[in-house]
Image (tube, rainbow, N blue to C red; front, side):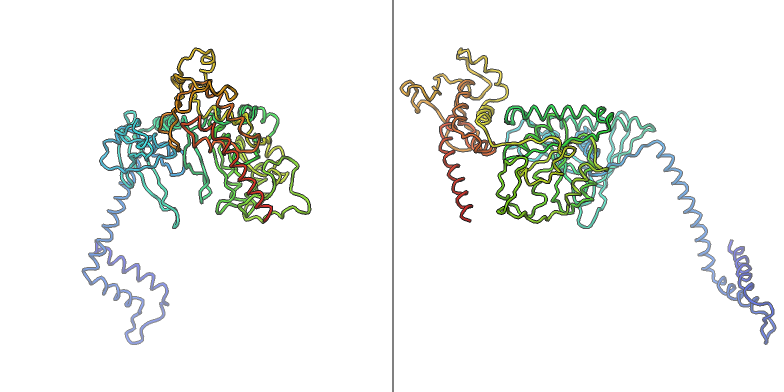
Length: 565
């Protein structure tokens, strides 16, 4: 081959060089044209080396072999891939969590040779992901620890079987930035030619994930990349655990359910399918708690929108709200504080209502805003062209009068509900729920007949020697305090509670409510007081008067110090 290439290259090279040299130019000494001697002499000199001829052979043969290899493997990969379906799941997407939970529970993972142990629960409660042999009925101290789960090892391919199909799983990590942690990526290959098997796998993984979240709600927050990220799941809170003034819970539940079922009605009239609720009032009055309970009742996830997040501006807020799913609860807490730089509230009463705005010569100048989100940007994000439809927006504030009227108008905040300080009705219901378990609610009618039967499921069952709970009765008819066994003082709940019937607890609840002044304490403060008496309902009633006096004294002192300042 070299003997053929040498004259060919010489002839080609001479033709190229000779075309650029005038044929009339000749060497004066020899009469020979340099166009015919110089290229031939150079090429002849180069090809006189045997090594160069061998190199040419290697280059040509190597090029042919490499091209053949690439062509073969390209055809081979196309042939093999025609029998597989490849699916890629990126970290941060819901489907990634579905698959990771499904894989952690797959039977083949218990026998895998290369695995990674993790305490990541992928947004689920920790008891939803367990290693084989871990007992869910263990002691409370063990259950309080984080659970372990099997995960695919990074950069390792594992194989398993699904519906008699061979499946390979590869977990990799992709760099996402200098200051960010690597993003996980899951690659699944299924030996099938139809998408039906992949759809069945996704549906099974989603069902298993949703089943683990049956009694929980999922919480999402935005990360530094302005993407929604699943951060946790929280147990659903029963509505009966939220004690509000009569009618408020029914109003919220009925209105939200009516909205979720009225999409065709909104579409027929050209009204944007959005609903906003503004909950305002005293701190600790149950605004956030009712949102948590409502999310569980409606089966919706909660997306927390923080206007003070680093990097949040008008564009980021608009993009974030536009990426909300169609059915969810978007939560903006303390929306009045989003445009203020101070952490302290001004002197405006927290329970102020519409029209009570800080005006007058002695009104305090509002603090300057440090948020990069402007009011106009917030308004456009809530009901602009790019605003998501189908979502339910909840905004909470402790200062109703500090909000701009444009933010509170219908279309942005359709329903306004005031949360006041605790009434005596709320105090009584809180005490009753605190010391009566859910399964004992229906025992009231059975116990009121005076039959004296013990209420077995309450934990405060009827004692053998009934306690006279009527404060107006004769003291001589009451049993001595020595005969009443009360747990030692403390905040623990491991000691045994005194046995009280349903009727006795209702009487104690009335006494407790009578000692609470109307609209002076928040529900959070009352609950905090009862937390110190988890297993001592009698002491909670006996000590509440002293606690009220102490708290009122604190408020008086704080008010006096504020006036002096």
